[in-house]
Image 1 (tube, rainbow, N blue to C red):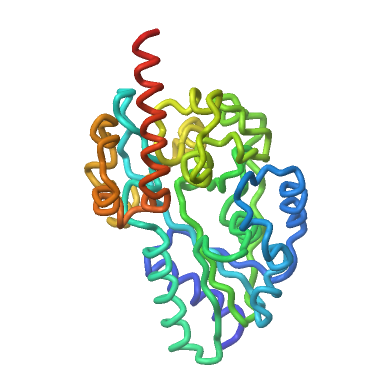
Image 2 (spheres, rainbow, N blue to C red):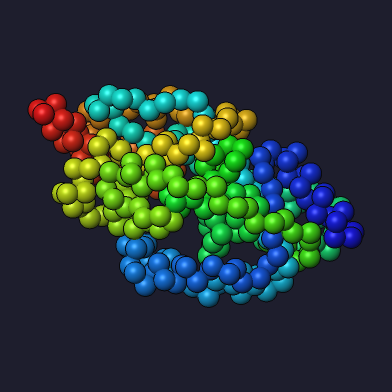
Length: 315
């Protein structure tokens, strides 16, 4: 099949499977991929040492998959029109972790996409990724015209804001590529101004101060008191820099039922959570991204949230 026909078919199939946006980029080293090297040298990755491994593959996707000719990037909307509780006695879980694990949902759809494409074009080969390999997803999403990386470092789209998951299908075919998208952040600094720990600079995140990092990736260690006091009642992840982003006024409800929140995840009572056993944690969160934290670190976060709640009550 010729390039234009195959490119159009890929986009048609991806949308039919349920992805909200799809774009294509040429599989070659990205111009601004060196940003990662500088970010790592500054130590902003904290204890995420896995980001230091396979650096050359992160900078050049053909070293990850030598047959790569094109990178197909898909975006999946996960927004559900439910608000976090304002009650500090209730824990806050990041919106993306309210429902079922997105890795499994996205991978299933990408596998189906690859299977359907191969039925039509048997010579097509590919590898698929969902936040699971040394692939700079946000840079590829920008290159493929999905959106732009905002000042909060999240991928922003004009159609549905930043409430999206990204996935990649790297294929051995040269395809018609999309144009990178313009940055539409302008002079806005809402995300930077709202971050309670000062983790954000324009287009740069110091993960060591980020509440999402602290509650998920900072494992098996206490959280420094000055940062813990600023975490509020966030117990897994943080949505502050997305909630204040003007582009998220365009958010629309997801069509993927798997992303709809489990009832217990929206307004969990901290006093009940802190009493959970390891087995209760596993049973409650096994199908959600929260499971990644593990019971020990999750309960650490809950205890911090409780302390912040009681401190606020005494103010």
